[in-house]
View 1 (cartoon, helix red, strand yellow):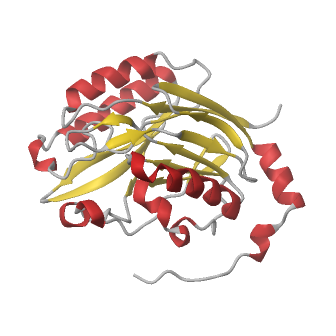
View 2 (cartoon, rainbow, N blue to C red; view 1 turned 90 degrees about the horizontal axis):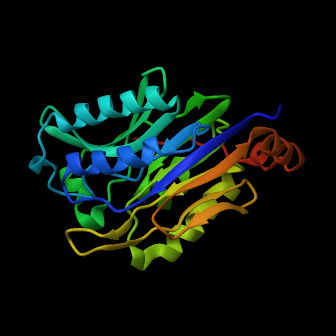
Length: 258
């Protein structure tokens, strides 16, 4: 049997700064996901929308959401990931959480905070990239604005799947489409981008365009609708492409400075 992973990408509306309402709505979608789903991906800041006022939420909302993810991951026997506004001490982070069915939690704090919206003034930027293993795949999950910075996502650790969770605004949808495909091609990896839809409290519109691309930039799945989008990734097909087109062997070596 070929080694495959079925991923579910949740493209949906988000209630503004209302974690309870968002968890209720998303729980229905998660529980309704296909039984053979291996990994379900939620958008950036899926409990609040892209808020620059995380102090409006109770400090316990972060841990509460992670525990909620753990319960659903165990119940559905699938991994769940997405980012949330997380308070730690007196600092806030745009923190991606990757929760496995066994209850283990891996986290990544968004490296490139979105200066155009003042995210850098509110959230502390992360410094460490996350690459983890799950069901035979090596996965690198990143967050929204990270998509514009190819050095940060460069495939130096031979990951198989690059994930971006986002609140990417409609006026720059063309850039989203182009960059997702470019990240797949240059890194010879599957690339999945999960965006929200609708309009947020600040008036910004989001048009979705959630998609999955293979290592050659061909689309495996795409949608502009409110839906749970599915794609099945085949590791043997990826290895075959990499075996024929050994582009990663010619990649530049470099060291990232702080």
